[in-house]
Length: 296
Ligand SMILES: [Zn+2]
Ligand SMILES: [Zn+2]
Image 1 (cartoon, rainbow, N blue to C red):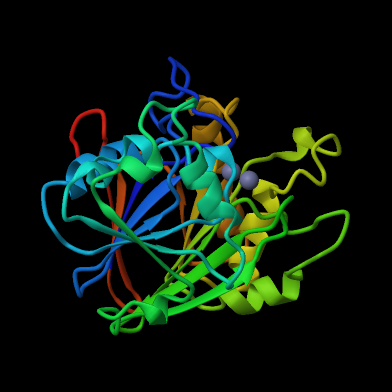
Image 2 (cartoon, rainbow, N blue to C red):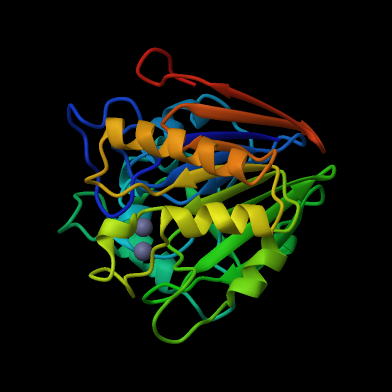
């Protein structure tokens, strides 16, 4: 399984001189399974560049949206494969009847906010409720959990050949109001996975002002990684204000934290172009590719 990050920012795209190293595009992660399935986790502005790669071949595409907020859908009108005739885009919308994220994705292409209407696209969109409904999908295991986030949403667990990842963005581990998934349930969901990708938008200085906004503290995410005994952690969905040098500092702090816990967890800061190859259980080969130097 190969995981490549195309957009790592939360809330809004934030290009500029202070975000060159980690990138300013919003949420989009590409997971290519060994069986040749392309899973696209969210359609933030990072999906534009992923589309350039995917448009070059005809492998199946399965889009999984965490939820319908702008930073998870806004790149879709610029996703090249949707303009390809005879191309099928399969979207898994989750629990039947919950068409909010899908509507958010398509209604932005209304001729007003974007010149091309969704109904005029030459590609075909197939909507399924469960990944298992996808006829050619037999090779990977899949589960979801509901996010602690305003308006809700889904976290995903994907497993193939004994290699497992979780994608948990826009999730507040310790929300002030109603808890849809408890901390103990998150520990259970993430237990022992090879790679945990988790929202790490805030640091202590953001609190208490942003308590309840649906994002986690970096320190809480590190603790979850320890409690769930994950193999590797990628801190994701960076605050648009978080600079490259602050993220470098967070990387150092995180290494120090895991060392203090005698934990073997590999910890990484999500960056555009970061590619992680998970070859087999307990064998995570991690490599970094700089998108600014090379297109993955
Ligand atoms: Zn977000
Ligand atoms: Zn959100």
